[in-house]
Image 1 (spheres, rainbow, N blue to C red):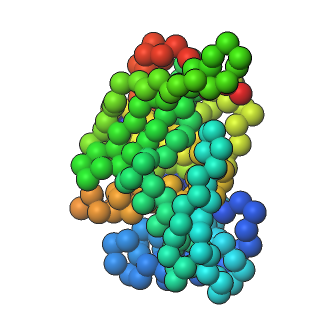
Image 2 (cartoon, rainbow, N blue to C red):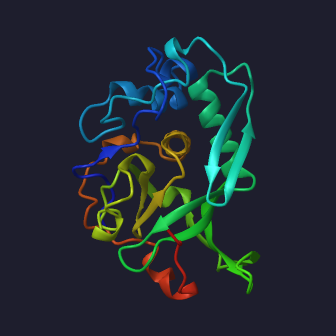
Image 3 (spheres, one colour):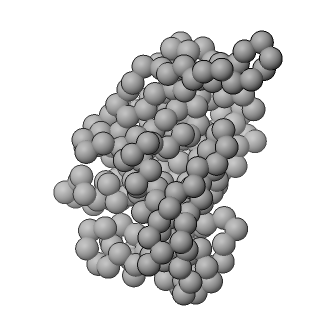
Length: 250
């Protein structure tokens, strides 16, 4: 099984709707393993973290602090409070990490066949877990209840690489042509790819930053050195099409 990004760029892009900052994540986090992960956004070459030359801070020059970070959800908005002492980029990653570890992130998962599915993605000490969430409606068309699918997981040490954009077969499908590349990223594992569509470019970049830090902690070697074709990797979500038979309504 191949794990890596071929023509794709590894974790990183620009924050949507924000101005560029001269501060890189490396300057924010320092020069440790986590700092190296974030610094790679600004300093990497083609096929590595940041083909679009880095995630910019939420405010020009990175001088202002954000007291809260808001991420959109499938059914409304979820407001994540973050430390006002943090810069925009650091606060965004901190909020995303906290949400992943607590209630999880509601996000759209794509397979190489079938309809996209709404899943709740969560981060534990040893793995990433996900399960489908299907909202059923009553006769009047109102949401009645949420049907939860079977819980699935992949061990963190089996996640080899993070691809940013629409680099995999699942995300490059004709049916996904209208999905903005700025919302997409993939977690490449030993078994296949987890192909995801965030709710906003800002959320996508914050999640990418969070997973890059996780991989830095998990892998002894620099996972960014892995550089193999990911466009033919099977989607890990394909086997779950039959689970609910219901996709995301667009």
